[in-house]
Amino acid sequence: MIFAWLRPNRDNTDAEALYAAIVAEARQPHYYTALGVADTMDGRFDMILLHLVLVVRRLMAEGAPHAEEARLLAQALADRLGADIDGVLRELGTGDTKVPKLAKKMASAYRGRFEAYDDALTARDRVSLAEAIARNVLRAEQPDAAAEALAAHAEAVAEGLIAMEFAALKAGRLAWPSRPVLGSPTS
Image (cartoon, rainbow, N blue to C red):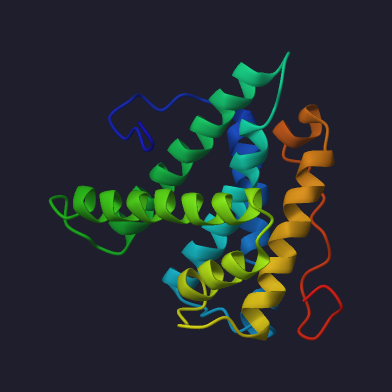
């Protein structure tokens, strides 16, 4: 179950630290000022999803002896996102009857973005990745320089995460690469 709202909330300090690191990166002003990501709830949600997908992909790639722990941590991150969505919707005054429907829609968005980003990254297909980022993050029909820069950034993040030791990753000590700049050699 991707967002287990009905399950008791388990204290998972690793998931909390890792989720906090993801959200902190996704909220960096650079994405919104230099790359044109909309500084809205949707824009921020999509930046969190982009970075969350990259971390979850890395966790799912963890081999023995930490494979099961990494899988559980990936699930805890998805659950944490679900709790965050629920909290935000309630803070915005969304009625109790609408929260599950909107949360389900957002969970579907997570799954769809995960599949699109994972497929493109696995295939090492930057064009498809830029198209998915343009569509989901920038709400554009065609990739532009910002989508290309974000795609290059996503690839760099994915490579950096693979190189990280599991202990540092689960503790939320993520070393994000430099943020993308339009017109840089990697974009």
